Image (tube, rainbow, N blue to C red):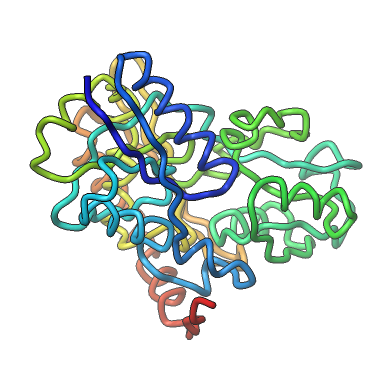
Length: 311
């Protein structure tokens, strides 16, 4: 049996994810250690994600450790992994997907629809902000960074009337009781890869890749490959207002996607069915670009987004 070292971020959720993969590997008889690695995204906590704009902000330092041989595999939230994986690395597995939907958490209000006028809602995701503003232009949306506990604590302290989070993260941490509303993907299309874990390894490390193969879930691989193909076609990452959700329906892929202006004034939605994940992602991406997605995204990219320096 092998001795495997996992690289992971240090948040409670990241640790849960790394521990989950470690447990599955240990059940196969492997000896597993976890090394916690602080990423750029962990160091910059007082700036909205959209204003940071660094590709790989939650993955680069872990990949550096992987390249140096300090760790043998990395566990990421797939939505944090750039669509273009750097040379020298390989997406070894995509795990069975958890609930990909976004959710509303609030102590006083049961849904987006019943939030009072000008309610203060917390999210640092341009994707969530844009779709939320399209649903409720009157809402007062404010940045919200930090781990799940930090965000829920700010809600508890009354800093927000509601916050938008990912269902998967709350479920993994045993905090599903905080969920007031599961938001339909038709109203708020999730981030590409949301709910899935990505296992990254060194390209060419055939021994490790072979040991990790059992973690790869066929449907999760197909659906997230489709979503990431769309994201790649649009030239977007996790800090831009793009949503994508692919599902297997009767053996066929169904992809729905959205491109929206940050203020919610324009929301373009497209969907299609297909069998080839990459071709379907590109097809829907092209349709969105033709309908005006290119202009929306160019406007987002043109905005001056200062790069803060890590402390």
